[in-house]
Image 1 (tube, one colour):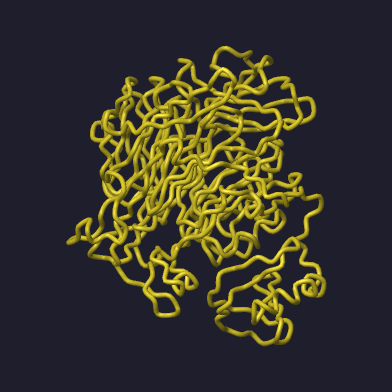
Image 2 (cartoon, rainbow, N blue to C red):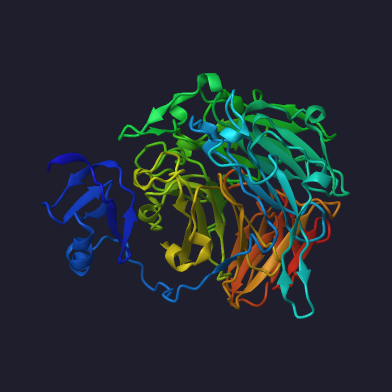
Amino acid sequence: MPVLDFLISDGLYSRNDAKLHFLPAHKQRLSMIYGPGICCFSRQNMPVLVFKHRLSMILLMLAVLVGCGDSGQELGGNPDLSAHVDLFEDVSESSGLDFTHFNGMHGSMYLIEIMGSGAALFDYDNDGDLDVYVNQGHMLGADTGVSDAIFQPKNELRDHLFRNDLVIDENGNRTVQFTDVTEESGINATGYGMGVAIGDYDSDGWQDIYVTNWGSNQLYKNNGDGTFTDVTDTSGTDTNELSSSASFVDVNRDGHLDLYVCNYVVFGYDTHRQCYIDTGAASYCGPESETPVPDRLFINNGDGTFADKSAESQIARIATPSLGIVGRDFTGDGWVDLYIANDSKGNNLWVNQQDGTFVDEAVLRGCAFNMDGNPEGSMGIDAADIDGDGDDDLVLGHWNDETNTLYENDGSGNFVDSTSQFKLGVPSRGSTAFGMLWVDFDNDTLLDLYVVNGAVNILEHLLRENETYPLHQRNQLFRNIDGSAFEDISDESGSVCKPSEVSRGLCIGDVDNDGTPDILVANNSGPLRLYLNRSGDDNHWLGLALTTDNSKTIALDCRAEIITEGKTFWRSPRADGSYCSSNDPRILVGLGGISDVQKVIVHWPDGAIEEWSEVQVDQYNELHRGTGRELDGA
């Protein structure tokens, strides 16, 4: 059979789940299976239908759906979402989240201008509701001013902190209202912001902030009175690189949060290169044109300072363009491992050797490359037990010409690429995924997936439409169908997937404390968006806030086993994951019709285990270490 190279100017339409999905036009190598006219092509083992004219597609859609045969993508028992219910409400403007990201672009197409920004959902003032932190950029170029920018700034050019003043009236109605408290907080983050990590590094009960930048990163200590102090120099956490995501994680089980920082590539105005797409139009270069930089691992000394153990731990042995991190005990030995998402290079799984060192076993354990043995452009990342077998599985977000990838954990820390099995391949191709998180948006017990998208190469169809910033794409929501597959319900989900923007950071948390997860999206050169959950279901839920011995510090790196009469859930507090962002560290479990939880067993980071038998559904429960029944631990 002949193999043809050509440009399909009208795009690709693929058959999947009895729908035709449009994939943006680009040059592709396709193996022709059927003759001209209405043609069927095979693209990496996925059936694709190509139409010469849109009219032909409309007239012959029924015949195509029947005549091209079974694609293997149909899902039985899918819920009827034809009513197009608005599952989330965009309350960004009404809630006071007045923020627009500024990337400083002026036409030079610097690599870093399309990378930010990140955001965080966390309770900085310990009043019980989630506040918002968001990164900001500044003007780029050695000899330019703000007046040269393609998009003029709408906010002050520094990171912003918004306080949540949640109001619940006598009828239970909830109003989320944010106040910009950046100035009074003492935070003066004026670098070119990329991401943010949240954690109580000094164990004083107040959440601290680590900001990643192009250039010097910053650590802000929470003073407990609404203000922060820059302790970067005294803490020993300064870097002068292009950092992306970061995570507070206790890698040595000493009870103090250590800090992992992802670094991308060497970037400077003097080394900037110009790249082009096939049509000859100028575009952004990828990481292949730059030198990667090793990541950093800072070990907490327990006195407010850190020691750079990047070399001793073996982390710095490999230099890769890192963009995402998630820390979990993937191997089941009770020690936190580190999974790193790399851009166009094999991903890393740093397995904890329990002696201060790590070994990269991603290739050995099947999660460095996709099922075809190829590295992918990994950006977004998350880990959770999506198949209900008690271990953490992985999902990775990739760029336009690739699919997102789901790695299923076999229970021993070995992984298999199950993307096709879970029907995530076809609907994710054609979008470039950054932030992505598992979320049970309707509390039906099954973890769904929300993905934010935005291209990194100029999209030809947007360029032809004279778009000023031709990278924007729509975000996606995938519903978990009975734990066996996912269905793309983006078109039926309403406002949460309606805007076409250049999305990057993603945070999930219960902003209005009503027991349903809400969504915060940070857009590049676009508005910060808050979507409150309006799914309107009557399902039960369980909220858990796990704290350490002092009953204030939020515990990370632990696991909770939630046992009910018919089902057991495994969940972890998660501040990391996504892309350059930090999430609500509380655990929120959708229970569906389950109205009673028999017990909760918490596996603490140092191996201790406690059990609580009296927890209440449909509310948040604070479980303080030392107040449960001790069980035999590791």
